[in-house]
Image (cartoon, rainbow, N blue to C red):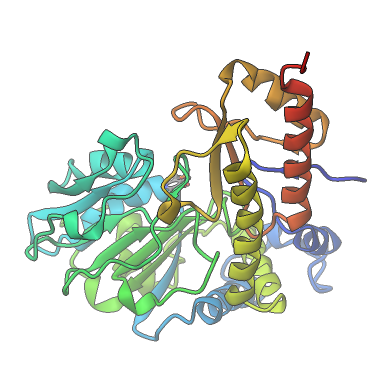
Length: 364
Ligand SMILES: *Cc1c(COP(=O)(O)O)cnc(C)c1O
């Protein structure tokens, strides 16, 4: 079977080795006669899977011991509400950076719980760059500062970690977590839905400094309280066991491949290939500012946008799937997370050259 290259933004490709591993033990995990899906979440088989997944994620990201790793549900979207519910800690306002669609959604949800101060926005520039750090109007009295280090739809990434002078930094890393090493100690809280660079949809990762939890709003539902989740080892109720198991296999795969430094080198090689091609082209373009070009979600356009449908259809015929940009952004987008091999990006660039050759007006 020849698998296509899937450039979808999420749910996204998983490493083939992980899928094959899961297939091989689908009906009988380690000789116990049960599928992971059938196990009690309190039984010793599943609890070992759960603990290993946590330990492997800690090892990959080198998470300090004063941080809790939570496996939650509801996707990154549910964190838009859980963050203010848990992190206001008696304060009345929170700072938010606006760099695109996902920041806007986080801001809208947070407004239900507190006064949101937008420290800076790149909306006027069509979200093609992130506002420069020195233009952020931050407030030292804010409960936290929230930002989206990688805007999945716009393809805008912020590389240096902002300095917040003691205000806890909260990051929605749904689409760039595990794409490179990070210094977790610079953050108060990191969250990510799994279906981009981790595993199947259904599990949401939260990494939170332990001194920030335990002060949730009084009416916070049990399942949304980070402290209760942490104290119960992410098993207040039944966790998404199979999704956690697959995520655990992905963590083991990443460790075996050499860890996050290797993932970063691969990401830079893949993204570099595509951006270099775009920069040299008169037929395609990318509008994202150079310093904010995402390594995982590469947005680009055909200069002649009337050819968009033909481009998407021909790509599909070549086994290059899901290349159309998000409906809110238009254009094209290649999502190239860890599971996308460089061969996929090479095939895309080859296709784009061919399409240009066939699509350009014929010289007379
Ligand atoms: C995909 C995405 C989300 C939404 O994730 P869900 O798991 O569908 O809720 C939020 N933020 C970012 C940056 C994303 O890429």
